[in-house]
Image 1 (cartoon, one colour):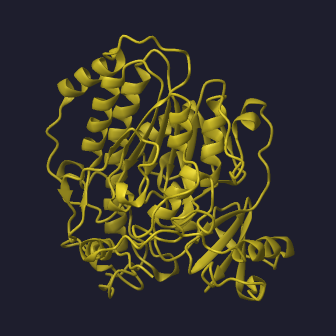
Image 2: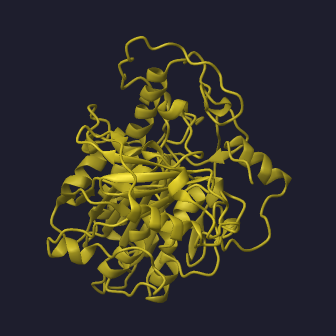
Length: 459
């Protein structure tokens, strides 16, 4: 990501914290909790210190985790930005919402969204996003009175534009200052650490990942698939090894963590701490299955095991090991705010289990990239490769014949396991659903060019 050096210093930040804390509205806080949803693009859970990464690269996210509940096995609904965020906003899986498997070329329609639910309850609503896949033309602006999708930086190696973490935080704090003490629902999407891994120069080289024994330079891969080498859009001058790219990725995470910390510092200075939910839309391949620095192609753990952290009044800090999903976010936030989730919501409201210190349900959740689906449970998953598209799926689909079963080991890795009939049955039922994608394609020539620059190719 091509970025200019930060021009915003401690004095600016201190002023913003004071103004956001004080507000400028004469209205009195009515006691309802505000809600902050933070989504981070392309962030693997296992590359955060609080999730076991050996380097201390995420101090602010780690502090948030210490104040709240860290979910050790959170699974993204997809390995692509659009479908995952649609699942977060509607509590439905990709085959059930109108984004489907589209990543910037379909539109979110029909199902009530988080913003609409909070807006109907009298909350002020705003969103700040940094990825063209989330532009208002794709329908993610539904329910938001303020939707900020202005991108001010051209990305390195690409024609696409983005907004860096520093500017995203600044725009969010400016809006919060205007709102004052009214209850709000705010969604903040940070594009970093999405590739190319190029944080501001002052953040480059802070972390060094040791090379594996015998590590060799990576070749350039053809196109954007990352199969066997470095995809074109990720190429950084002078860097050829996996450890070098991972080091830059860690630098990106540290930079993003810094500006999330500034946001949390400001909102926590308000009279009432907001409910905070933090997650990522998907992970990133770092050589697993011979794919490098991409995420769109598979739903294996490196691409869908994401962080998920919840801090809320009445919730005791904890770590939970049972599986949770993006589809749990809507029912959880709505229940914590004293509202009611739509009947269609696929997920589980986690608040009652956390308040009562009860075990979470042991259930199956899905990660769906269209070309493959993976069904996860707390200690195993089944990956179904070459699945039919949802609108072609039928009772003839045989996931049991094509799936590969894995089991969780205490080392944090996955090993081959025997077939599991229960999981096969649920996979079959999910695959038999028809996609409900609606609306005309949203891909004029200019958008198609920008999507291809991101490594995405409409089906």
